[in-house]
Image 1 (cartoon, helix red, strand yellow):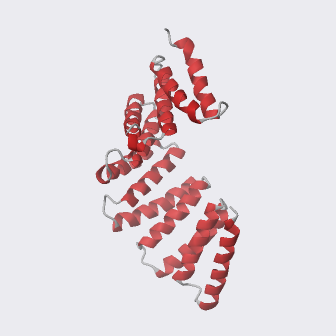
Image 2 (cartoon, rainbow, N blue to C red; image 1 turned 30 degrees about the horizontal axis):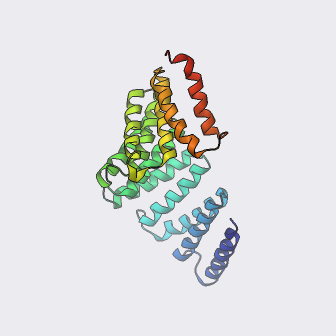
Length: 255
């Protein structure tokens, strides 16, 4: 955080210098505006970030072709800031502009397309439009399956997101299927991250609990707890929550 004011001062000096030499509509100015927007975004000053990204976009729209790749990047940057600000209608507008350009310029299996589909899926989850979220996640998954090894951690993330959507839609068997796929990747020794695995065990436990399977649910919660207690302090909210799930289900277990 201490370096941000210094970096900001550097950008402001560069901007003043550029303004003294360049016409007001110049791509070098747009690049500096983008850099300043990115810095303000990192500082979580989203209103200033948005202001500078929009200054950059205004210049780019006047100088670049409407399907230029740089515009897709700026649209995506603006969309992300709106997402951080929870302005979801604006998020969709800018991510869809990003996607429109990417579909014109990129091959159908390009990772940037997958990322945009994933982003759109996330936004639709936030707005509880689960069918739309699922559609975008599945498009992202299709690209990832074609371009990544089957045990890539990026696939684990998308399987988890799809599982959460199916859980929200109360399609518990399909949710479990996707969580199991995530777990299979996580249990690969090369991808091992204990707390992520604990999270998956807990998600699986929750689905079994929702299905009123009071034998399987505690067993997965206990697997999660065993990992969490190795890495978290005793009063960590995640650890406490997992233990509460175990305790609540104990009278229902029937053994």
